[in-house]
Image (cartoon, rainbow, N blue to C red; front, side):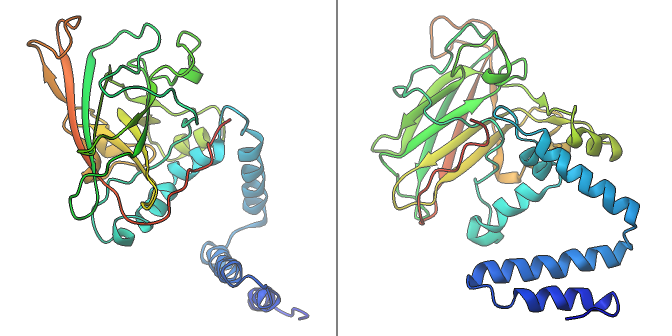
Amino acid sequence: MIIERQEQVTDAVVDAFQNIPDSRLREILIALVKHLHAFARDVHLTEEEFERAVAYVAALGQRTNASHNEVVLMSGSLGFSSLICLLNNGNNGQTETTANLLGPFWRMNSPRTENGGTIIRSPTPGPAIFVNCWVKDQSGKPIEGAEVDIWHSSPEGFYEQQDPKQADMNLRGKFTTDKDGHFWFRSVKPAGYPIPIDGPVGDLVRATGRHNYRPAHLHFLIFKDGFKTLISQIYSNDDPRLETDVQFGVTRALVGDYRRHTGPAPATDVTGEWYSLDQTFVMEPGKSRLPRPPIQ
């Protein structure tokens, strides 16, 4: 098509994409073109703004490396990661779900740990937390033999690959549910933490006048054949930033009851305050697969 006016540009691209052999790819690209062109018309995007946007997208890639994924960070900061999660879980967003964001810090091959064991692998000061979890199907039946990856930040707000003081795989572990769908472990209570703002995502955070903090949480990745892999985060109910999470990840079903205690603890070496968390996860039937680690 030889284009005579701006309205015809969209039609020309859509016509060119009609013969894409992969029907799903064709559907996605045509919808993308229509929405992208409509956005440009809606805000009447200027040439200068377009050039800045292209440079911004390029900068996202340039800031991404083996230990940091700026693109994932941006997706979360726009609420897009949360939207995709909710669209694909909880009956396609119609019901509450314990599914949540993978986040940028998951690693494969966490150390296998016996139920009741600790995931503290180097000195990590902070209040102890004892976590008891159950994994069930949608009818309430326990799921035995599910593999559960756990990871979280330190009480100082750092994941182990960000902090040279922490041992490799500190605050990470892999557990297996028993016949009751139960797994349990000991760690230290995580803290909320700032996302990096020394790149393009930081420019967005500052431009929108928002803080750059995530509320404290534990990460869970639950894998079992015959079930859709469940990725979750359970947020601390005492964190003041639950309603202003910079990554828009907090849903009502994911606010955990982190209970503070001062009496006798489940371990004799714990004195002073400590915390407990009881949580039940519900897995949906579906295809089990592991995600690609955001960083290598």
